[in-house]
Amino acid sequence: MAYKPYNSFAIAQAQFDGAAKILGLDEATCDLLRHPMREHAFAIPIRLDDGKTKVFRGFRVQHNDARGPCKGGIRFHPQETQDTVRALAMWMTWKCAVADLPLGGAKGGVICDPHNLSDREQEQICRGWVRQMARNVGPQTDVPAPDVMTSAQHMLWMLDEFEGITGAKVPGFITGKPVSVGGSLGRTEATGYGVIFTVREALKELNIRASDTTASVQGFGNVAQYAIRLYEQLGDWEHLRELLEGFVAAGAGVFVDHIGVVPLLELQDSLHVRQDAHAGLLRRCQDVVAGDGGEHATELENLDLFRFFELHTVLFVVVRRRQRNLLAPHDHDAPLS
Image 1: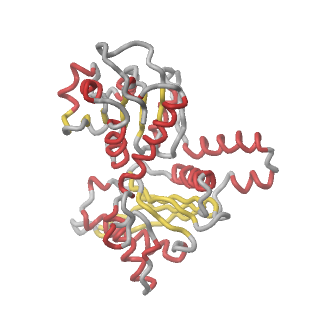
Image 2: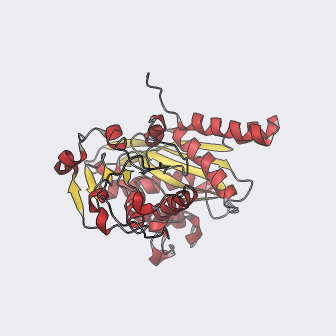
Image 3: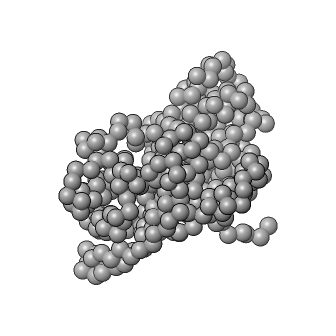
């Protein structure tokens, strides 16, 4: 099968077109909602630690604010694109509306790789992003948040820059900041836990016991780590240590269980995969697959082994009934809580 480039915004628009047809939306409404209300693209020049100057590209897309101030994260990624940001902003609009929150949808990003930048260089990018957007963000207009490869520390730098520009104390400017400066308890775990709550409800709907499932996790970011922790608690997992080793982040080269982190290379014999065999790993008859971040994660919809459930803009879960017993017989009487 020929490889088809994945475009998040094209996917988001196609999803909207299907829903609009079912709802019978008029042409003007469709034209308004198929495209962002406002887009910002700008340069962020910073001085690197070696004394050289480098210019990074930043974005902020505000899809729609009909329900209230825009809301959405800021992503740092070397493969960030404006189309990815457009799609995620659109999905934020729908999520806020479905949850009946008085917020609109937005998303931001910077094309950079934090792994190759010092803390000082990342701080300069954060402050430069705020300087470019200060006139168009705030508690009443657009509230940023962390996303892929951004953290509470990044939000704190942005908050400090915004308050320096405005000359006021404005903790409501940004979410995901440290608890000590007005952040929310549980915010760090919230996204990973949320996806497992969704898994739990999907398993109930499909009449599948959690302790009868195995799982793979793509990625090893903040979301994946907390999703793994909660997934372990869904059933009686003491006898499933082998299957906990199926929590694999091929990109990071590690697997996670309730004991620790081990290089993936040490698991090659038991997993029957090469370190770069990402798709092959996910084809290993798993019942639950969760993806963490990354635009191309959702290309798993091309795998014919899974039924695809699109649950989150940066997370997806696939639930499939087990076709064969991968374990020795056990007493699986623990109910799904």
